[in-house]
Image (cartoon, rainbow, N blue to C red; front, side, top):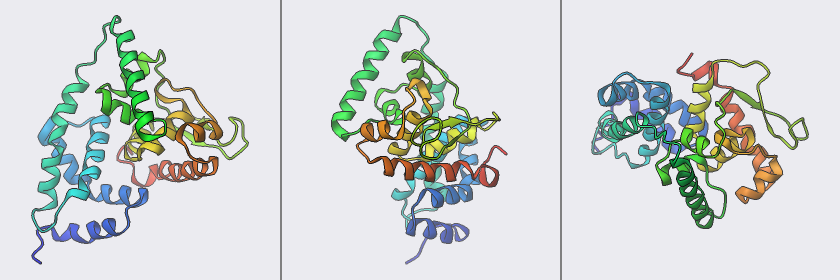
Length: 243
């Protein structure tokens, strides 16, 4: 078969396709970063961390639809990332009218309940954002609390926050963008675990047991997922684009 994928990307693509894990996703996205950066500049201009995080997520979600026999991978990604234009426009139109807060909260609560019924678990904030069209910043605002996403670490079972809670790091740093990038690349369940463990976007900080109930998983499964997320957070010095 005559493949049109770029020769230098064929092996990384095949390696990723044969083993699609969070670690392989991060590794392949690092390989694709030059293409993603060029696509961002083409579609929306100079990238900011949030736009870049969204672009990486869009690129990853588009990869299963890529056919190396039909087009170059770069062409595929450029086409798929055209959606950044709409996302970038939405970022510049934050609704700030106080009278809208009550209505927006009703929309968020209704969408959340619908997805609980559909999924049999608590939806992640990313899923709620996709359903409602509200940014996660807006979700935090309508919930009445707007904490900044700060770097942190997962503690072991039974430590201060109780059953593997998520604690802020002792020393704060400038890794907000890296944590956001990790968050964007997680699946919805892992996103929910981060949100509910750290208390992101106005969510109440919960223990493993409480999270397990909300997500219809066992506490042990929650702990295992936290460990995998922590591995990604620890890769900041190795693959973070913000270093």
